[in-house]
Length: 386
Image (cartoon, rainbow, N blue to C red):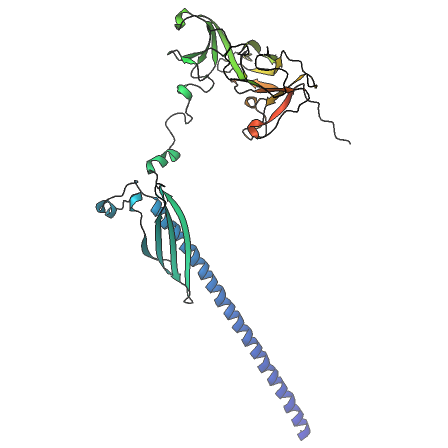
């Protein structure tokens, strides 16, 4: 090999060695970056875990402060036994060893203004992370000074029917009805004859008898057995209505099943039940669908106000009904005063109307103030164009 050839081979080998060293250096820097990233991710993961644990410890301390057994403070003996009262809640500190850190828990208690039964609690959970940095979690809450026994009523259901029934009777029995002491109650609707007695079963709420009697002794009454329901409510009047509370307005039912059996109102009373309104009560006899005695009778149909000149001028009357989806189920149920009732098996109250001038619109407002046109029947909406 000539000297020229040797020098050329040496030069080529030297460049190859330099390239290898450069590649190793670049790879080393890359590995260092990966290692630093891995350490950073581990630190962030540790911090997230510690923060979650610190919040849990703080919430646990808050729940312990809230779990007092009485409003008054316990004595030292009871405190040593693990009991404490609302009056014992005070500022304190505690050390808690967690899964990968030691936490210092400090809570500061502040009393509310005089006469206001609650305390404000601020809980600070502090710890040192793996890099030696100081960390903390802060939680704040209010602790009401109410008797813990009162809160039990929210979690422990009452014995028997959970809904409190007026006078321990079915909700369909009118509240003013007089208990007869034999499982029934008698009711005289406003505007009815003084000797009329509508008798309800206290357990089922069904209207079972219609009686007449001039004294309070049921044994002297003359009665007929019926299987009926009440429909009751009020008729109000707008400022421009051409009629008022003294007008001879009647309820008329157009029924597809069942029978209207008398309506009563106080429109002619010298002192109405409520000034500015007519109070009405109607009796509807249900229609039996089968021979099963356990199956309630039912009725279907529509109620309208009679005795009015219905029209669209200022000298006419328009009837609006209070109706809306009060229970939010997407339907207008029988109790929510639909245009027509369907398969009714209970008494209905608050089936209220408003009479306005014929050229006025039925008013709307909040959910309880919303009315819809009832008479004359509103024009159907036109079909969309194809």
